[in-house]
Every structure is written in structure tokens, then in C-alpha cells.
Image (tube, rainbow over all chains, first blue to last red; front, top):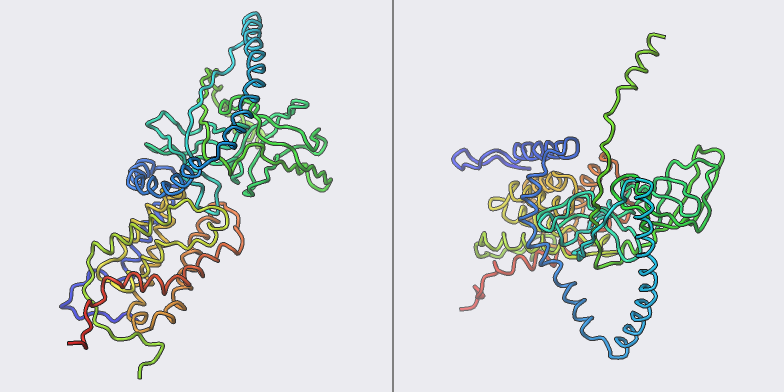
Length: 299
Length: 173
């Protein structure tokens, strides 16, 4: 197919040689990135190069939305205003209760000499675009390292948890949604305090509870909130509702499907939560398994 | 009489490297638009299409380096593993460069029959890497975008050839 050119035309290495060079380079990058996470610096540099394109590409949708907001009718605004007023009144009452409860809580924790619970701050971020990758559920938001967003921070909307910052660039950050297959959230059943791990399934409307024993008390309609014991999510944020419990004795664990409460795929604005807490240091990992193995060999 | 499967012989103006660069940037831009829902499944990879077009049309002006760098940028924008799109685009560029003599002989419509398998190959490489890394098979609609890409090929080649068209009719004095 490819006729070799006469030697007086210099064309450099043959296409096959170039293919080998570039695919080896790509494979090295793949392994270095997937296995060892060496390439964060390179990724940051490339992210700065694509950043203007990302912003410009997100602009048309933004402009369309703002134009839509501009052309609202008078009556729609009035209705919304009345509704918000009512909501505000309702939440003001709750807020007053919350304040007195918080004061009471601080007092009682002081009496018990218990460790202070977390303080959280939240920063508003705009969603630039949703995942363009059918394999993973990610969104890109317009706050990054420059706005003190760090990897690992939880992301919420007005109802509950929608995901977690998995990679922060200079002016952008990548949020993995709780529906992503690899995303785990430690949760607590509000009704009875049972703890479990909630995992995404890759499906936008289903989550599943993993490794829950068959006889665990989970029912349809149970609300799951973050447990806060991981030190990543603040405790008590609503996450999901149990939608289907299937107990089959042939499996070791119950299959519990849940639906996310927050609008995981709907929001254009999200809150990035900063959790300030001073956890005691983790105990150093012990070499127990090794010893156990040795003793088993000896025994 | 001219065969319908053969490309018509027209002497084209030389291409400007800036134009190639601009089309590649525009392709990257279109890929970065906020596609969502079903559009995500039918959206062809415009960068792959344009890289393939230039590798076939101008294999001396553009090649592996551009394809590979664009692949890296796509990886960052998608938040996927580094080198995934870079590998796929390099192989696509190789196919384009090796096949360019053959492809240039064909008219636009039969070229589509070459383009679709190449785009499928591109998708399969990305799919393989993702599945090796532990992703689930996303379902057969995943391959739909290659066919949409093939369908867009005629429009794309007319569009990208526009600036090379001779401005005056050579038969007209």
C-alpha cells in the first residue's frame, strides 16, 4: 500500500515506525497515569491550555439560559416571589429552632467534654458542562485551586449530596457524581441508624447499598443521610431513599436499590462544601495480617 | 465519461497550515460543547473526524504529533486516563496516512465506507482501554456515533475543501 519514496526525498521515519513510537508513548502515559498517578503536573499544564476553549464552549448554553431568565413574565416573577416568601418564613422558623438546638448542643457537648463536631462552609459554583464521556458520571464546575477548592470536597445542591470533587485544576474542578460506578458514599439509615456504603451503578437514577447482610433492617422509603464517620462528608446530608429491597437467600448480601434525592443531573449551580474538622490522627497501620500468616504457617 | 466512484480531477489551491490548525481547534471546541442526554450518544468525535480528514488529504502537513497532542487535550477535558485518546488518534492517523493514496482516488461517497470502520476502530480502542481499567460495557448505542460521523463525512469534506477551490473557472476566459 505504502510505496517507499525514492531516497532523495527525505520523509523521516516510516509511518509504521512513527505509529510504534507514538503508541508506546501513549501506553507509557496510560500506565503511568492509571497505576502510579505520576502525571498530575502534566495534566495541570494541559488543563490550562484547554481552559479557554472549555469556557467558550460552555458560553452558548450559559447565554441561552440567561436570555431565558431575562424573558420571564411579570406574573411568573410574582408567583415565584410569593412562593419564596412563604418558604423563607417556613425556613426562618426552622432556623430559629436550629440555632437554639445548636446552642444547646454546644453546651451539652461542653458538659460531656466531647469533641466539637464539624464546621462547614459552602461555596457556590456553576456547572460548566456535564460529562461527555458515556463511561463515567462527571461534571465540570467553574471553581478550582484558585478558589481554594481541593480534591475530596463534597458537592451538594439545595436537597442533598450530588457528588465529590475528584480533581481540582487551577480554575476548574471535576466533580464525580454519586451515580458514577466508582463513587462511594458512607451513609446512615435515618430510621434506625444502620450504617452502610452507598455506591453508584452507572445508571443515573439508581444507587445501591453494598455489603448489607440479608437480615439488615432496610425498608422501602428509608432515608439515607451521610454518616460523617469518613471525615470527608459532613454528617447528616440527605443522599438517597431506598426504593427496592430484594432479599434472595442464594446471595450473601441483600440487593438494595436506592434513588438519589438531590437533582444529580439537573442543577446548573451547586455548592462545594469545605469541611473543617480536627480528627484525631489515624492509628498507624499494624502488621497484623503478616503476623497472622506467619503464625498460621508455623501452626 | 467519469466513473462515479472516482474523484473528479480538479487542481486545488495550496492549503494554508493556519487553516488546518484553525479547523482542529474548532473540532476540539465542538467536542467540548455541553452535549448531554441522547446527544452524547450520537455525537461523533469531531476531533477524530478532522484528524482523519487531514491525514488523508494532507499527510505531509499533519501527522502523528498533532493527533497525539490533540488526544492528550481530549483526555484532560474528559477527565479520562492520560493517553487513552492519544493512542486512539495515533492509530487513526496511521490508518489515514497509510490509506491516503487509495482514499484520494475515491469520490466522497465511497470514502464514507472507509471512514466508518476507521471511526469504529477508534471507538473500540477507547472502549478496550476503559474496560481494561474496570468500566462496564456501555451498550451498543456507544457505536452509533461512528455511523453518525460517517454520515457527516461528505459535508465535512466539502466544507474543509472550500478554501482550496480555485476562485475562477479555468475553462472560462
